[in-house]
Image (cartoon, rainbow, N blue to C red; front, side, top):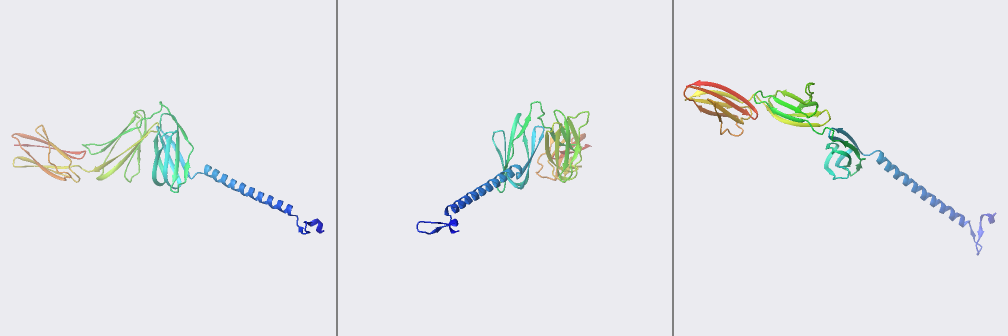
Length: 306
């Protein structure tokens, strides 16, 4: 039995199958190394595959006329956004600090590829596949034009939107209010005009316009609502005595005396009250006064015979 289980060396000592044992452990070590190597490779592949299929950041792109609207979101605040057309210069936005970024980018003529990459505050970087966009010479690249003015006579705000082809809509809203949408008349779709009353106090209005091709324009205007400058006129020592008063600021005044126009001088900066005199002439005196709060005018007329 011992002869089956052992062999003897030259000194008669028993050696328990030494070569088979060494062979067994060598094979075991090799198998273990292969298992570890394969396991590491699978984990690395899964990690890369997960990063490719489920990026940390997300990008949505919308073509609006000659502009691309980009919305980028991330689970972690974004610190840096890079974008470029084709292999051209890279535009970098730094120190963002938000989990959402909205961008508007003008589209070049022809066929182009937009490249976008995002880095969050933990330095995790997501590079998106290139986005192909085409813009031909036949497409509308002209944005609507917005003009916001104040009527000098009525004090109303006048919004005028025009387009070289066709407007889709215009919307406006005062600070803290919901937007109001206005569409063009069927008779002329190249223009939208709206007049608005202005409440007292200083407010800001925001206007957005979009044409039928998706081109978008926006503007804003700060206005101070008022009834205008108050004007009173009296006669003293053969003079018209004109008194001006305002809840805001008197910025300018003129008067026309018997068809001769004059500018009122020396009105102090930020003046809310001001007084000046106009000497009476022999006969009938016709006096017209125009006083301004910026672009809002108040007119006053009177006559007096000396």
